[in-house]
Image (cartoon, rainbow, N blue to C red; front, side, top):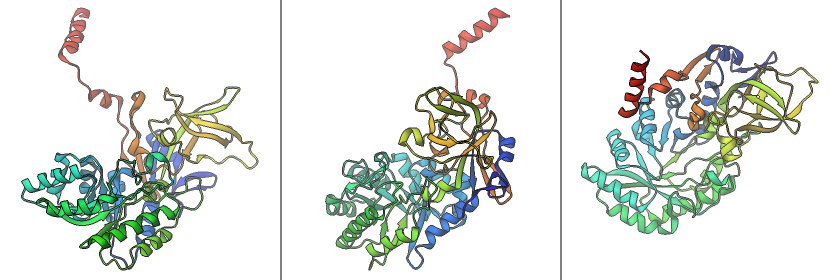
Amino acid sequence: MNGFEYRDGVLHAEGVDLRVIARSVGTPFYCYAAAILEDRYRRFAGAFVGLNATVCFALKANPSLAVVKTFAALGAGADVVSGGELAIALAAGIDPARIVFSGVGKTRTEMAEALDAGIGQFNVESEPELRVLSEVAAARGERAPIAIRLNPDIDAQTHHKITTGRATDKFGIDIARADEIYALARALPGIEVVGVAVHIGSQIVDMAPFRAAFARVAALARELGGIKRLDLGGGLGVAYDGGSPPDPTEYARAVREATAGFSGELVFEPGRYLTADAGALVATVLYDKDSGAKRFVIVDAGMNDLIRPALYEAHHRVVPIVAPPPGAALTEADVVGPVCETGDILATARPLPPLAEGALIAVLSAGAYGAAMASEYNSRPLLPEVMVRGSDFAVIRARPSRAAMLARDSLPPWLAETRSARRKSRA
């Protein structure tokens, strides 16, 4: 299913002309197709029919409340990495028993909040964290359900900044210490060991690293004994170049092979696979500039809105909202934004038709780690987010006004007094 397609030469999100949304909310904006969110979830969850599997959406990919609630309505759990994400998951109606709290830097306050909520699992990533969690839970007369996240020292063969399963990465506990940490966890008063966990990275399209990690952790779980849950993380990638995304049935086959004979629960934490292709960033062309050495299409969206190309050298397809006529001349251009950085590039060397001032373009597969990682750099407001369902659309997060942005700041007394004195002197 493709939620973004041309109809009569105009790009639509499901049944909605993207130009209509642009006129309504202004550009730039993020648009999400609900049909794709639902389709991706059903494809992923459906691959594990017959297994005792729980699919927990990784909120870090897209924490928009409407997106999370869309998955909640389908029965998803949640993988969270902060107290803020926990609050969003609960507000979206996720069953607390289906919430996993991951991340290497949980604070005591966040631990207490998660215990108050009654979450189903903490993924513990270090011995110090394990001891702190025990203290927090025991002081409350509780036992925190945990899975020990193991680092299997496997390179996921993805971008080095999103690889998480190597011995030199900050995530997880050295798998060689598994016996020792498992014994410690069982002895601590505030801990209930329910499983082991692994997550080796993101945007993985080759099944080989998954197979190696799953086999290693499943074998260890059998050796440890008493493990009733295997959390196999997420990381399944998407086809940013417009090809076919990895097939979750192939992923599920790797899981079934590695966990054959395991009768407990399996937990998965997909994020990017569920949301990336469901989102597009829509922007307006400001200038089509020929510098002599290179063509630049300058748009009103920048690296503060979509940082992935600048941060990860990530590739996103860029297309005009109005399709060029057949035979239109295409020339290579860098699509860049207005941010005062040379690295403010959304796409490099893309064949594009001439684009007049006011033309609209779409940056596709931007539904994961787009709005989630956006900032107000250069004092540019965060983008509005819009969700489409069929022929309807709704703003699910509004663009803040400049007045609202300024209202967040306050002046210290000595500066406020100076401003007040200037006003009096002018009176």
